[in-house]
Image (tube, rainbow, N blue to C red):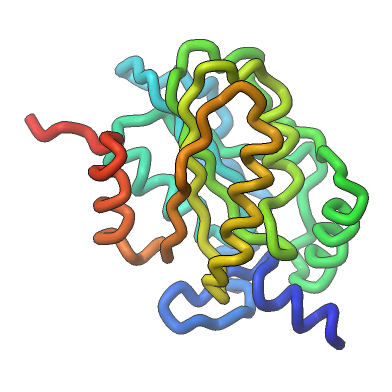
Length: 211
């Protein structure tokens, strides 16, 4: 019971962005777990206009996907959904068990749509939910797959509990796995808080300039 409670605070669910609910969103979890975003199945450079910014994200319930899509819109960045080779269970508790086992063994789950190269980008915004008090291990897989020397990386995340200590743990995880990159202070906000997201992007010079 204690393990289930701990996971419900900051793991697969991360739903209820406005109410603080810890239960997974039934309306979004199935499609988010199994179906790639419209741009996620393509090369991240497949957009009509070239961009030096990549918005890469992993989402289980759909909340991080919502956040990433808004950030890509505001920055003009290319959107890439990180899709696991073995999809996570749709069931909340089963997903929690898999996530905990991966964290405890420091696993690096395989990515189904891993780009061969991301050398065309100099800025990466990397998004994820909080799972068991840190970033999902698949984020480590993505970061460790490339030479990130000289790249600028901006983590962004959200969770049901919005616990800042867990957020700090996740940023430390990104720093440990992004060798050679400059990892900046991350963004911790609910997907619905567009004001906070916009302010973060503007403060870091990431917002697209208005025509």
